[in-house]
Length: 322
Image (tube, rainbow, N blue to C red):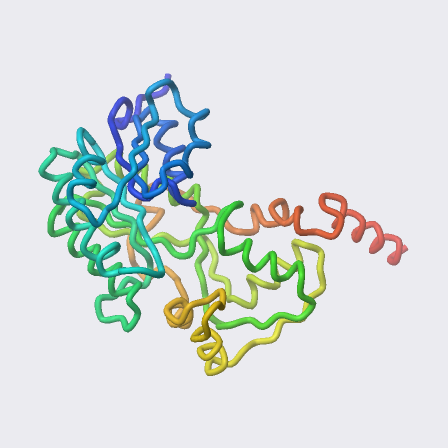
C-alpha cells in the first residue's frame, strides 16, 4: 500500500510553470496528488497539461511577478510555492533578483509551508554578468524573507523538448562543418525529470531540506566538443567540428542576432559543474540519469531516414565487414 504524499490535496503555486521545466514539475506534483496553480505571463502554454490532471486539480493564473498585487493573487491560499522564473534578457535584476524576494515574503505571510527557489550553478553576486549576479541576489532575497526555503542550483537542463540539445542537433543536421565555442568547457548536463523530482522531494520535506542549497548535476561531465560529437554520432552523421578560440568566440557572441549572447558566452567559459562537496541529488535520494540514456532515441527525427537511418548504416557496415 503506497503512502500518500504530504503534497496530496495541497495547493502548489508554480511561478514560470508554463515553461520547459515547469511542464515536468507540474507533472511530478500532479502525480503526488497536489493541486497545481500555474502562474505565468502566458499560462496558456501549459494547457497541454489539462488531460493529465483530475477535475479541479489544475489551475491557471496570468501573473506579472514584478507587480505585488499580481503576486498576491497568484499566491492566495497556496500551501507550497515553486519559483522557476529565469531569463537572459529584460530587467534581470528585477525579474530574477528582486521579484523572488517579494514572492517569498508574500508566501511567508500567507502561511505557506514550503518554498523551492530554482536558481542556477554559477550564481555569483560578484559576477560581471547580469544573469549570474541577479540569480545570486534572488537567492539572498528569498532566504531573507523565507529562511526555510530550499534553493536548487541545476546545471544546464536537458530534455526531449529542450532548447539546448535540440539547438545543436538542428545545426548538426544541416551543416557539414561546425564551429564549437568553448570546446573544452565542462558541463554536467542534468535531466529535466530529475530536476522536477528534486523540486517535489524538497517540497515534501521542508523540515529536512529547508534552508539548504543543493547543486544539481548529471552523473557525467562532458565538454562542449564531446556533446557535439555525441549528438552527431546519435544522428548517424559524419561532421567536422572546429574548436574556436576564445577571442573569436567572444566577438561572435557580441554580434546581434547570434544564438549565443555575450552573457551566455561568459557563463559558458568556466563550465557548469557541481562544486566539490556541495549537497546534491544524493542528499535528496535521487540517482540522476545521463544524456546517453536518451540521446539515440531523441535524435531519430534528425536522421536522414528517420528511424530507419541508423539501422541502414549499420547494415552497410556489416556488409562491408563481411
